Length: 79
Image (tube, one colour):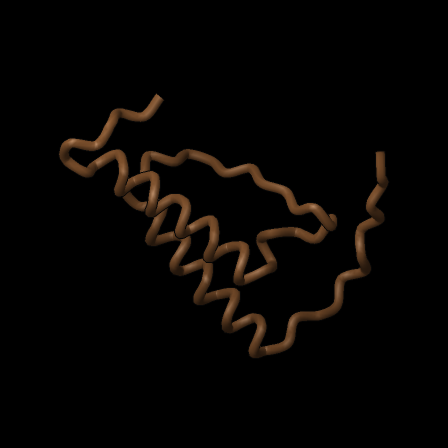
């Protein structure tokens, strides 16, 4: 079993912060109507996914995909 030490956090650049805010706006939009009440996720390298715009957008895409599958007529029911 490997132990991953958390990396020291560097301050976010204004560009990274702006991109992160856009990603969180996408995530918030994806949550609407999804029925999701909470999210728990982790990364393989110990960095917080919440500070990675690509990871936040991936979570938003997953929520949209699940929501769309649940609301598509003729789709197999989940579970």
